[in-house]
Length: 351
Image (cartoon, rainbow, N blue to C red):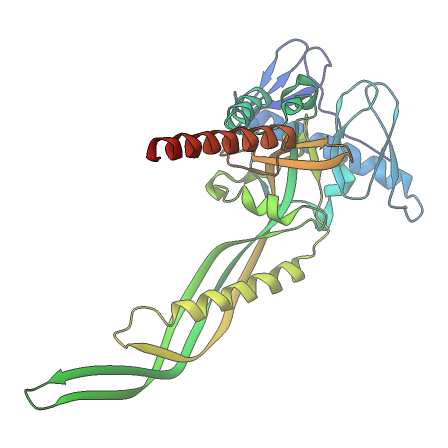
């Protein structure tokens, strides 16, 4: 299978996207390329890769596929959703172009804004606030496994018309020297409106952890750039396995839920009940790769995995961190002893 490695036009070394410079940098000679220059290089590489694929015309492929590194010739084995990785031998960044062509080609990508050094700094600042964190989690070996990954997401825009049919109730109370009068009025309520929902996000990879990936949202979608495979160089990337039809269906369900809530807002009744019907008139989805820093840590006697994610654009974090139970127990015992001594001292003072 063909691969794509972006080489420096000056020295032949490989290029990586540098989030701090927002340019593409050669790690050997330091040459910098702009987005426009890299986009042209991307088109050239994609054409070469497509030509190589046309020659191969392999039989139906298994879920595990083998590619060849263009730098050292080593074989790279990946699963069927990996779109960018590194060679296990020479560590060159490799983009598996055929994974993101045709129907799987993204519409856009949000490039990393935080490089690995900045992500690690924010990560360490975050975990140092955790008093009972397992101190093994601080070691440098764990940070070596801090990986930049592009995850696939669907963003859907929905425009439509909503109608509401229901009843509004209004109760008022008046009093005189002799009587208290309660007036209960019921109104038929008919509402109509045009509603638009923008960038309803749905993950496009089933194996991605929903709690973690949802926890680092939102992303600033104004930062979406037209897709160029060069952005993947130096990072890991996954391709989608959720279809546009499934994403649209989920997004429409969410739009219906929002419509039902919106059509019952801003009224003067004491209560308003009824049914909302939302008819979608325009639905448009786009497939975007989002930058994420990921750390997986195996801790405890059973080696249970802990996952930590950081938004590669905003720095927002989410994850489950390993707790040192011995430190928690020691703190609890210390607090218990302090309370006991305080009570004993107070009792002696009273008696």
